[in-house]
Image (cartoon, rainbow, N blue to C red):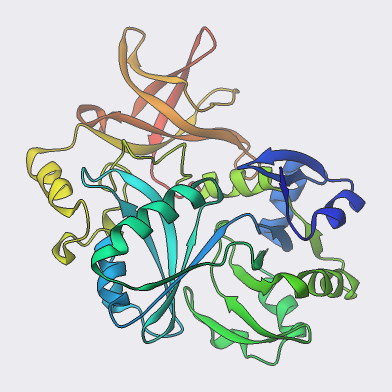
Length: 357
């Protein structure tokens, strides 16, 4: 089992540690509800150093990454980032990721922890005709997500970079907490704003300690459980739950990052799916009764009409109700009310737009 550089700090803070994608990660430090609400109102810090980082460079790097990714890579300027998916030949999602353009022909791909090995093998295989330089830098970086409405004012205390000028999906490489060459990215997975810091491992402890030494009671450590409830409130997909190699970007409401005209791997299959018509679609729903939906629960139009399955669900600390995401039959997208089977009970629910808040 792997540990992040900050593992001992999590233990000192009495974090509950769980196995996540082969890493011993902090799932919570206090109550998940309290951590969730804190990020929505203040500023919290997540250790997400288990994520993977691949560097791709060379004269063919733009063409190669476009071959791999669903979005229009040519639109990424230096200092910008873009949300993407890797897809297979049938249009199934191998992973979702963020692509950073570091230099004209140098990119950083940030992938999900559970998919590091799979993604790397796929990229190596597809690189044979492009001959780009590939570096797996996953073991070189620690990644801290500082999230919440007060993240900007808090982080500004540690850098001379003007963070107010940094737009969403943009980044700078500069000094942070006295450490050089830190990637400061205005990205995140919470919907509450904030930054993600890509830090060489030998600087991670110093930056963590400096952040918590600062006289600001707003900062709290946040675990992966609250990260999950935060992203569900925003309707963000989680790989392995809401998206996988059997789901397409169109089914998952990710058509906005799917530019089939760029001829990425699987674009023909996705175009064919669009022409022939989707059979299912990912939707948001909320319960009208007190209960909590979970992954795998069945969705019905009536007590005998099975129309889909829940992929993500939780109790929303902000809305104080059960919410979730589910794939349902395309013919029932306009249904206002649905039933979620929770244990042996059919719970009245309704389809709603995301984000939930």
